[in-house]
Length: 68
Image (cartoon, rainbow, N blue to C red):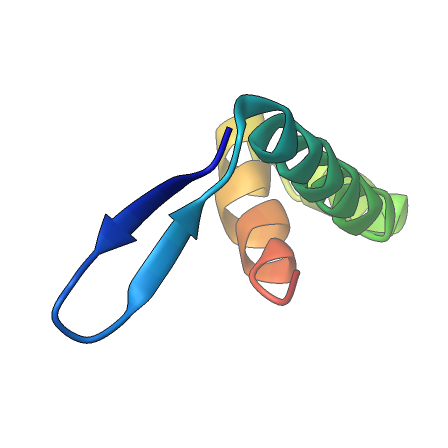
């Protein structure tokens, strides 16, 4: 079911729940591909340097996922 939302500048179409769920699946797949593209050697080096899991996440994962 399509609903029309009227505004002063444009008309937006809000799609059905199944369309939203399909987009969520695509976004999850893109994020997973981004996570898999991070080299494991970076996490190994951080562990050797004494970084905790949270530090590795904040200083390796988050910066490298910003491009995704």
